[in-house]
Amino acid sequence: MNKKAQTGEAILMIVKLFLIMVIAFSIYFIASLFLDYHIDTLNVEASLLGEEILNCLSSKEPLVIDDEFKSRQDEIKKYCGINGGNNSYIGINITLAEGEYLLLEENKELKESLYLYETPYIETSVKNSRAPGKYTKETNITVLTEEEEKLVLNLEILIANEV
Image (tube, rainbow, N blue to C red; front, side):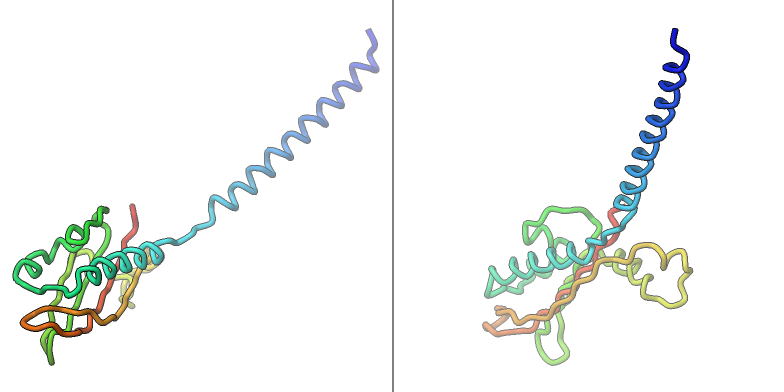
Protein backbone atom coordinates (compact mmCIF):
# COMPACT_ATOMS: atom_id res chain seq x y z
CA MET A 1 0.00 0.00 0.00
CA ASN A 2 0.95 3.55 -0.69
CA LYS A 3 0.98 5.49 2.57
CA LYS A 4 1.51 8.87 0.88
CA ALA A 5 -1.67 8.36 -1.18
CA GLN A 6 -3.69 7.50 1.93
CA THR A 7 -2.42 10.63 3.69
CA GLY A 8 -3.32 12.76 0.66
CA GLU A 9 -6.81 11.26 0.56
CA ALA A 10 -7.31 11.95 4.28
CA ILE A 11 -6.30 15.59 3.81
CA LEU A 12 -8.64 15.91 0.80
CA MET A 13 -11.47 14.40 2.85
CA ILE A 14 -10.95 16.98 5.60
CA VAL A 15 -11.01 19.79 3.00
CA LYS A 16 -14.21 18.38 1.42
CA LEU A 17 -15.92 18.13 4.81
CA PHE A 18 -14.88 21.71 5.60
CA LEU A 19 -16.32 22.96 2.29
CA ILE A 20 -19.57 21.06 2.88
CA MET A 21 -19.85 22.59 6.36
CA VAL A 22 -19.21 26.12 5.01
CA ILE A 23 -21.91 25.64 2.34
CA ALA A 24 -24.38 24.19 4.86
CA PHE A 25 -23.87 27.05 7.36
CA SER A 26 -24.18 29.69 4.63
CA ILE A 27 -27.47 28.15 3.44
CA TYR A 28 -28.72 28.05 7.03
CA PHE A 29 -27.69 31.68 7.66
CA ILE A 30 -29.30 33.01 4.46
CA ALA A 31 -32.49 31.04 5.06
CA SER A 32 -32.74 32.24 8.65
CA LEU A 33 -32.45 35.87 7.48
CA PHE A 34 -35.34 35.48 5.06
CA LEU A 35 -37.54 33.33 7.26
CA ASP A 36 -37.06 35.53 10.32
CA TYR A 37 -38.15 38.67 8.43
CA HIS A 38 -41.70 39.67 9.42
CA ILE A 39 -44.05 40.94 6.71
CA ASP A 40 -47.18 42.53 8.17
CA THR A 41 -50.19 41.99 5.92
CA LEU A 42 -52.95 42.92 8.36
CA ASN A 43 -53.40 46.44 6.93
CA VAL A 44 -53.73 45.02 3.43
CA GLU A 45 -56.26 42.45 4.63
CA ALA A 46 -58.24 45.20 6.36
CA SER A 47 -58.31 47.39 3.24
CA LEU A 48 -59.37 44.45 1.05
CA LEU A 49 -62.19 43.57 3.43
CA GLY A 50 -63.23 47.22 3.63
CA GLU A 51 -63.35 47.65 -0.14
CA GLU A 52 -65.31 44.40 -0.46
CA ILE A 53 -67.92 45.64 2.03
CA LEU A 54 -68.13 49.06 0.35
CA ASN A 55 -68.60 47.38 -3.04
CA CYS A 56 -71.34 45.20 -1.56
CA LEU A 57 -73.20 48.12 -0.01
CA SER A 58 -72.82 50.36 -3.06
CA SER A 59 -74.00 47.61 -5.42
CA LYS A 60 -77.25 47.44 -3.44
CA GLU A 61 -77.88 51.18 -3.90
CA PRO A 62 -80.18 52.61 -2.96
CA LEU A 63 -79.46 50.89 0.31
CA VAL A 64 -82.74 50.21 2.08
CA ILE A 65 -82.43 50.88 5.79
CA ASP A 66 -85.32 49.06 7.35
CA ASP A 67 -85.82 46.91 10.43
CA GLU A 68 -84.42 43.85 8.64
CA PHE A 69 -81.21 45.69 7.76
CA LYS A 70 -80.88 46.99 11.33
CA SER A 71 -81.49 43.51 12.76
CA ARG A 72 -78.52 42.13 10.81
CA GLN A 73 -76.16 44.17 12.94
CA ASP A 74 -73.87 41.26 13.82
CA GLU A 75 -74.01 39.76 10.33
CA ILE A 76 -72.40 42.36 8.09
CA LYS A 77 -70.13 39.80 6.43
CA LYS A 78 -73.03 37.41 5.93
CA TYR A 79 -75.14 40.23 4.46
CA CYS A 80 -72.41 40.87 1.90
CA GLY A 81 -71.72 37.18 1.28
CA ILE A 82 -68.18 37.27 2.66
CA ASN A 83 -66.80 34.14 4.27
CA GLY A 84 -64.08 34.46 6.82
CA GLY A 85 -62.87 34.00 10.31
CA ASN A 86 -63.94 35.75 13.44
CA ASN A 87 -60.81 37.90 13.74
CA SER A 88 -62.16 41.18 12.39
CA TYR A 89 -64.19 44.09 13.73
CA ILE A 90 -66.45 45.87 11.23
CA GLY A 91 -68.08 49.16 12.13
CA ILE A 92 -70.42 50.99 9.75
CA ASN A 93 -71.64 54.41 10.85
CA ILE A 94 -74.25 56.06 8.61
CA THR A 95 -75.16 59.69 9.35
CA LEU A 96 -78.93 59.80 8.88
CA ALA A 97 -79.66 63.38 9.92
CA GLU A 98 -78.31 66.07 12.19
CA GLY A 99 -77.09 64.19 15.23
CA GLU A 100 -78.82 60.94 14.23
CA TYR A 101 -76.65 57.95 13.39
CA LEU A 102 -77.11 54.32 12.48
CA LEU A 103 -74.23 52.28 13.84
CA LEU A 104 -73.78 48.68 12.73
CA GLU A 105 -71.03 46.75 14.45
CA GLU A 106 -69.78 43.20 14.14
CA ASN A 107 -67.53 41.79 16.92
CA LYS A 108 -67.75 44.71 19.38
CA GLU A 109 -65.74 42.81 21.99
CA LEU A 110 -62.86 42.40 19.55
CA LYS A 111 -62.74 46.17 18.97
CA GLU A 112 -62.35 46.85 22.68
CA SER A 113 -59.48 44.39 22.98
CA LEU A 114 -57.75 45.69 19.83
CA TYR A 115 -57.80 49.29 21.02
CA LEU A 116 -55.53 48.25 23.91
CA TYR A 117 -52.64 48.70 21.46
CA GLU A 118 -53.26 52.46 21.34
CA THR A 119 -53.53 52.91 25.11
CA PRO A 120 -50.37 54.55 26.55
CA TYR A 121 -50.41 52.82 29.94
CA ILE A 122 -50.54 49.20 28.74
CA GLU A 123 -47.67 46.84 29.57
CA THR A 124 -44.83 46.74 27.08
CA SER A 125 -45.34 43.01 26.47
CA VAL A 126 -48.74 43.77 24.90
CA LYS A 127 -47.39 46.73 22.95
CA ASN A 128 -44.56 44.67 21.46
CA SER A 129 -46.97 42.15 19.96
CA ARG A 130 -48.42 42.77 16.51
CA ALA A 131 -50.76 45.71 16.17
CA PRO A 132 -54.07 45.12 14.39
CA GLY A 133 -54.64 45.97 10.77
CA LYS A 134 -56.73 49.12 10.45
CA TYR A 135 -58.77 50.59 7.60
CA THR A 136 -61.13 53.57 7.72
CA LYS A 137 -62.98 55.25 4.88
CA GLU A 138 -65.69 57.86 4.53
CA THR A 139 -67.87 57.80 1.43
CA ASN A 140 -71.26 58.93 0.18
CA ILE A 141 -73.94 56.32 -0.38
CA THR A 142 -77.51 56.49 -1.63
CA VAL A 143 -79.87 55.36 1.11
CA LEU A 144 -83.61 54.80 1.03
CA THR A 145 -85.16 55.56 4.40
CA GLU A 146 -88.45 57.38 3.87
CA GLU A 147 -87.10 59.05 0.77
CA GLU A 148 -83.99 58.50 -1.35
CA GLU A 149 -81.05 60.61 -0.23
CA LYS A 150 -77.28 60.71 -0.30
CA LEU A 151 -75.79 60.11 3.11
CA VAL A 152 -72.30 59.82 4.55
CA LEU A 153 -71.08 56.33 5.41
CA ASN A 154 -68.06 55.85 7.67
CA LEU A 155 -66.47 52.41 7.59
CA GLU A 156 -63.94 51.13 10.12
CA ILE A 157 -62.24 47.74 9.87
CA LEU A 158 -59.87 46.24 12.45
CA ILE A 159 -58.23 42.85 11.87
CA ALA A 160 -56.55 40.97 14.68
CA ASN A 161 -53.71 38.47 14.57
CA GLU A 162 -54.51 35.13 13.01
CA VAL A 163 -53.13 33.44 16.10
